[in-house]
Image (tube, rainbow over all chains, first blue to last red; front, side, top):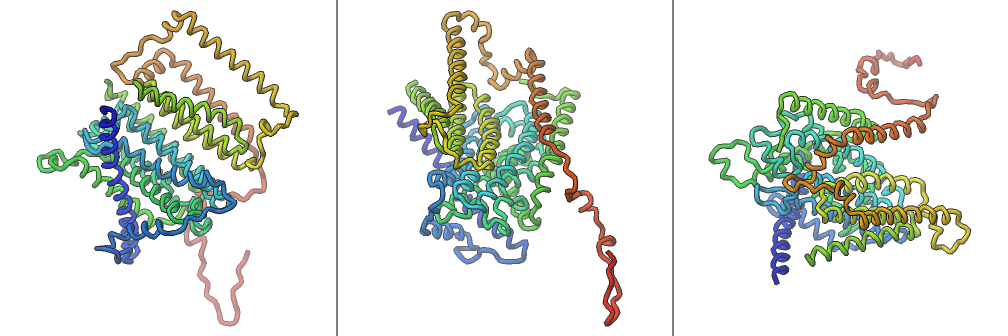
Length: 332
Length: 210
């Protein structure tokens, strides 16, 4: 009986986390399309519900009632597994995101490593989908995507090391608390810019959306997918984008901490601040999608390996030397 | 405790079965996927014994990077159609004796290691000095790696770097007659050198010198 009650408590907690995440993924798709449209002087989705808020719900309904087509020449098991892997990996990462000092599902020692590991596993959903479709465009998209995500992960990893040098702990709550006096976006501003651009590449957002470049590859790795399976890829992708925004908010923008430490602001719960910061980063993501043209593939690789990696490595040396020289290294 | 046992046996059964399936599955790409499953379940086992740092590093390095490259190579070489010969009943495969020798060697090595642990426990007491429980295992790992074993650690890093550079040097070919795109040249182009406005006279046309 005791076990059961513990299990039920955990299940409630997980549902309380995952249902808002899924709903906000649907809302964020609407926001993305609206911002995109406003930049281009269009209206965007504005018909279904007030301001078109229910557009994503209508789209989801449409996807659910469409027939799922599995190509006869595909590798069926892996073909079906691919969207499941993408979706699962995008959702399990939320377990370690702290919404306040106490509101976190799993407050583990190596939180940032867990986030990094899960986001680096995300490439498998795409590779599996592209390979199992047994078709040219998905395969090309998958190969491009694998190379792209592996390259930009390296620079994200080095940027995380920069932040960890200033914190001295891998726990996400410790990272947030270490920014009490100053958000890391101020001393590590160049790293924030590189993190933002690498996050765009890691989540296959424009201008780095080569894996699904519609002008050349139809829809890349998701070409052969239809109905609910396509919707799952799509949900997983947006959940990943939100996750990257959350990671940026925690690493550089002070997570759940209020921007000013004075009376009326400290009353606002931490979750609200975190969500506002995630939204701010997401609107930046959406703006980039609207204003920047797609990169050429060789330039994408050049940017990742020849610009971002050396720059972030140099910054690690700089940060470490600065902290060491002024005796600011966190010791515990 | 019982929940712990259930999780331990689940992960170890998955690890062993997927390790067998790596060699037994007929499709090479499936083999790589089973290898990934094996890595993941082993990192779960690491986390279960309290070595969460090792488990996460295992996930990041092996599953996130090494296995992706494996998969990449396997897919690019188009060996997906090549069937694994072991279970196909073909007796003439030349790899079987080599494999048997290597597996016997590994088996004896494991016996030596585990046997030493069983019959000479005092040797391992020196190596397994009690972990300092007041700090997290990331901290204690760092304190050992960067103090007592700093030279070994740095040298192993250098060896990896040398191997990487060696691989690049071995495969690098200087080919001539290739058209290269210079990034600097492309973005530093001005309008004046690309565009020329000409006065075109009627019925005469323009001659563009090349």
